[in-house]
Length: 129
Image (cartoon, rainbow, N blue to C red; front, side, top):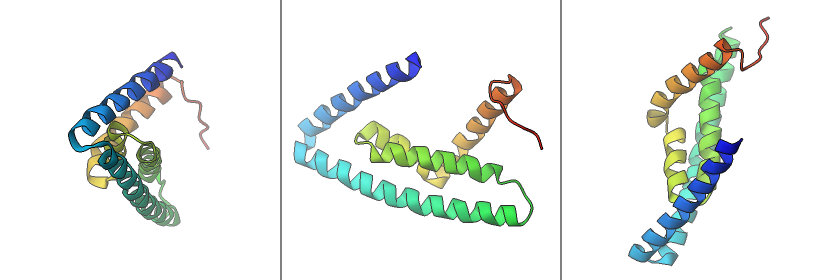
């Protein structure tokens, strides 16, 4: 929990620094406009990607397959949408990386390995049917 708090504090300080830096270059009103536009575009993109992933997961389930890949896609898209809704340039970049399918692919394999390690260490409790 300490790491999460420390990460949030550092990220907030970095975001403020980037706001001031970019605001000094292009002006504060342009910064506000860019933040609002990336938020709107990002949330619309996340909604579209989320619905598409949901449909693929339903199709996978109807064919009798486990939708594990789509669950991880959904986690990435949800996390990316939260980042995109949060004002800031750093979180917007992270959000777009998680929402755009082409950039999400390398992250999915890392997330799958992380979850597998957690399950192997019995950190995550799960039930086999």
